[in-house]
Image (tube, rainbow, N blue to C red):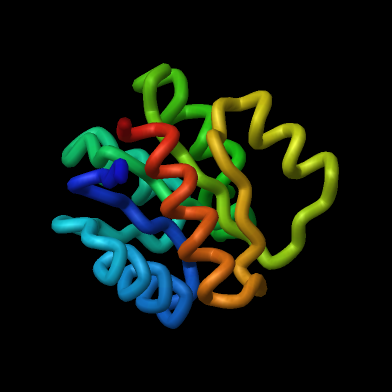
Length: 126
């Protein structure tokens, strides 16, 4: 069972960051960093080099797609999972093209999100 040791959660909504943080802790992730926008995500990624990033698409200052692009340039091996409430085919395809390994809707049931996260971790952290 694969598992990252460190994670960065990027979302402009406090309750979403808390929700994802609690889920990651239940899965066994040790250290979790947080950022509230894409610009903070770039700084946090550069400072901490987390094993995985879980990032919202729609955020102020710098959106998740732009931040994903910068992180992928900074570290082509970065593991980034995009989270969003509004998933269009174009957003999913753009995220994948820019380096996202997974795309999860925030409104899926908790058990389904945890399952997708664990499956993604198993694939990425063998």
